[in-house]
Length: 68
Image: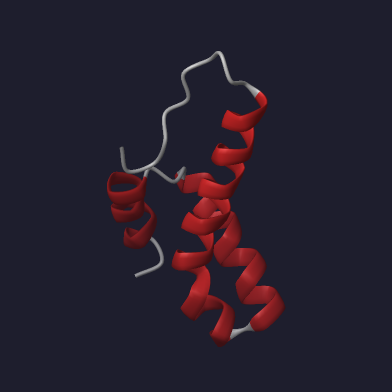
């Protein structure tokens, strides 16, 4: 399941697979099963936050937002 989920998440939320796999490893190591349960939602939230902050710093450039 943890191999198929990044591929699906890439299509649905535009989160890079590498970031998602890193989040699986990091949250799994830090919080165990509970971290693995929340990894999908936290990955999308973290990626969207970073993109929004980047968009704020570069107001004259067009930035592709996940899900748009």
